[in-house]
View 1 (cartoon, rainbow, N blue to C red):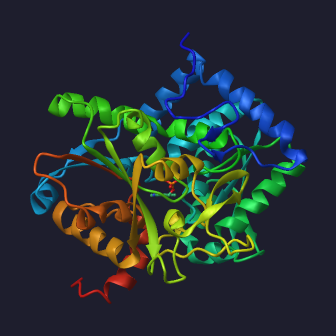
View 2: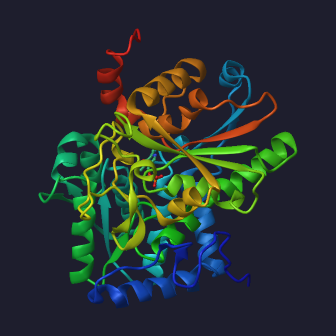
View 3: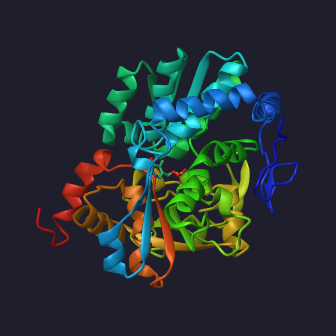
Length: 402
Ligand SMILES: *Cc1c(COP(=O)(O)O)cnc(C)c1O
């Protein structure tokens, strides 16, 4: 049996440098300890890995293609490869983690799953997996998000999940997360599936592990397509950081592979309407981890803003706080307008409508110069179906003929 060894720079207590850890109330200590023990036990288990791999292949449809985008490459004068997470079942990378986490829940004998969701993508992925495995599913969602993400709410309900609208705070993702944590405190027999590389240790590490299938496939696919497994650049958007963690994972220890994280600048990093946590945040604690947080001088969380609901979070996973502050990853702040333009460019040149989140990663092509012989892999974290309403509404102001 192969012993689990993280490829990420994490210590025993779950810190990446000074970021991470588990800042939780006493009442959650045993829940988190049990989860940590189960994760480290089953992550090494051959049957567990076999079941995970089979579902990735036969249910999710993996490996997702690595597609050389010829017209986009010609347009930008470089070699662009798109990792097509948009082609996964349910339309994004979130299903990878939902399946891994639900398998772990089953091994731990849990029957009730709790999740939080913002745009509804993680809620849909979790509700899907609960239907698949016969688990009870409760999804917390801010009341504002329930109203603006109606199709995903309907999907979750059809899948059998109970969607609980949260009325506190700004009624968005941060408030839904608070409520999910509160539920977990009262119901320690439930399993909490977090949708990103955030939360107390072991969540960031566990979610990164389940998502690492992305970079594992990129390596195999590059090797067979071009005869080298390491690209020059890997680019991904970061909300909490799970698709970026998955796309970076197997390259973190290869400094010749440059990592670029695209965060959501909203209307600009100094506009007061932004979700660019790495540019605009400072060290603090949010949802159980020490990381970078958008906060006032006296530690109140500042409400984030982005056109993309999946990037609209006032924190960032501790791994990315570490990669950014240590200089291992370059972080670019992409505005709403830049993301919309990038979405149009991909759509009209390659016939792929990306999720608004993924469009932030694609916008890096307009902001950074790549060389003619560079190999640039961009993670297309999800598809744009859920964003059609926003696209059509926003593009009419941007000189785009539709
Ligand atoms: C949720 C989501 C994101 C942002 O979450 P990460 O954990 O940062 O990956 C990005 N893209 C899509 C399509 C999403 O649904």
